[in-house]
Length: 345
Image 1: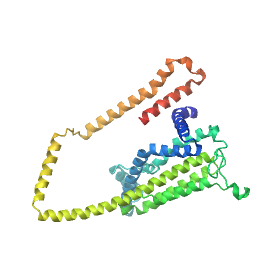
Image 2: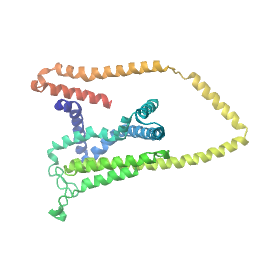
Image 3: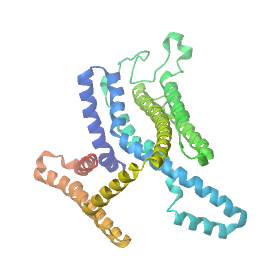
Image 4: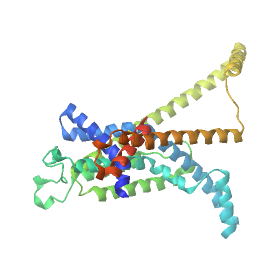
C-alpha cells in the first residue's frame, strides 16, 4: 500500500524535481548552488498558495479570538453540557470549527511532499558524494567543524543556521497587524512556531548536509518573505495615514466648494450606468448551492477521466513496452503523473 502511495504522490514530484535539478545544475555547474536554487524555485512555485494559507490563518485567528471572548462570557453563566451546547451553537453561527487551526500550518504542509521528494532524490544522487561547499567537505554527510579538531565534530553548523533563521522568522512574523484583540493569540502562534523549529532542528541535525542545506534555504526564503511583508505593511500603514489626512483636507475643501457636488453626482450617474449595463446574474442561496455542487462534480469527473482513463489508455496502447511484473507500479506512477499535471495546470 505504501509503495502504491509513493508511486502516486511522491514519484511524479520526485521525477519533476530531478529534471529541474539537472537543468539547474547544467546551467550553474555547482551542486550546492543547484540545491539552493531548487529550494528557492519551489518556494516561488508555492508562493501564492502559502500567501493564501497565511491569509486564511489570519482570518481564523481573528475569528477565534472573538469567539473566545464570547466563550469566556458563557463560562461565567453556564457550565457542563449546557455550556458545550452554547459553544457548538456559537461555532455553527459563525461557520467555525477548531480544525481550522491547521490553516496556520498550511505553508508547512505544502512543503512536506516536496521535502520527502527531495530527500529521496538526494539519497539516490551519487554525485553528492565528495561534493564540497564552504566548510562542508561532503554533501552526502552531516557537516562538521574539522578545523577545531575531532572533539568538536559533533557540532553541525547548518542545522544551527536553520534554527536561527526559523526563530528569526517566528520573531518577525505578525499574526495581527490591525486588531489588538489578538495579543494573547500572537504568543500562542509564536510558541507553535518555536516548537516546530526545534522539532526540525532535532530531526535534521544528523541528516546529510545536502538535505539540511535545502531546508535551510527554505527557512532563509521564508525569513526574507516575512521581512519584505513587514516592510510593505509598515509602508501601507504610513500611506493610509497620509491618505486619511488628505481625505480630511478634501472634505473640508468640498464643504467650501459647491462644484464638488456636481462631481459627486456625475460619478454617481457613471456608477449607475455601469451597473445597469454590466451583465450579472443574481442567484438565490439554494440556486447557488446547486450550481456550486454541479461545478464541483463536473471538475471531479474531468479529473477522474484525466487521471484514471489516461493512464490505462497509455498503458494499453503498447503493453509490450512495460514490464508485466511492474504493472501496478506503472499504473500508479502514470496516475500520479496525470494528477500532478492536473494540479499544476
